[in-house]
Picture 1 (tube, rainbow, N blue to C red):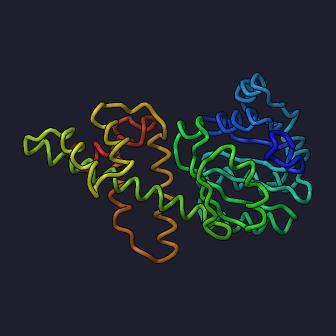
Picture 2 (cartoon, rainbow, N blue to C red):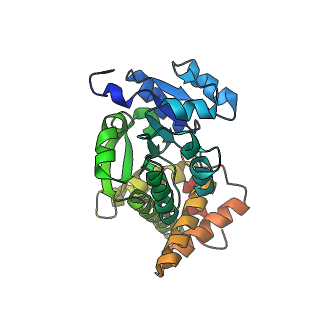
Picture 3 (tube, rainbow, N blue to C red):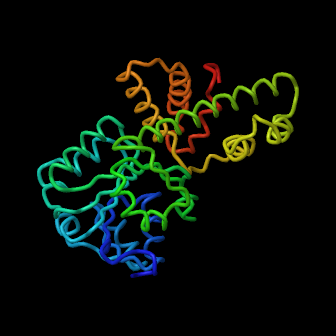
Length: 298
């Protein structure tokens, strides 16, 4: 055992996707004594983590072929599909029994296809999108929404517990991504509501900060109002989660709803606000900025 909680048969682990979320997740694994091998197309990303104790794989193929559990944290559905399914991808190099844990936020229905292809190759695939932003990744307090075979999830749970504090198996493959889509929808629609509420208060000559203070003690109180509502009042849009990524996620929500034949009218309002924010140059600001653009003339 490495830290008296992680079985040796789960080690070493590999990690691909060493950005704003992935890098602190790797550091938390390392701090717990888990041997982590990393690989990145941009060598400098991996080298920063080597300085923290990670091992740099000589190649993508070596990384995939030598680890027991492989974590992914990349930007979008095509990235995961390419990594998993392309000639020379993960399924080309993986040993039977590998478990891939995907922390990316991607299309739930295409996740099911990826998981099925992985099963055919003797590889387990767990969708494990996260909520909590960069701060949650640093503090290992992320919420993980898990989809996949229950036995596979239970096997990797000791590793997941090192990067998140709330681990919930939602259902079979793709269910974790459905939960993440719901998460992004609720946050987006709540931000629109907060933006409108602040606008109403200002139009009536009432201080939005005092309105927020009053609402936090009642049923309208929420983490979004507490944290993002404060960001709005302070004009603090240093990114914990960038607006362009929220826009991507809302596209996934819209596409999934359309495929399932359901009409989610709130999706359109959130996407419109995000689109206006991006048009005004806020792609790399925190997605809270969408609340400033929830009405067309702002």
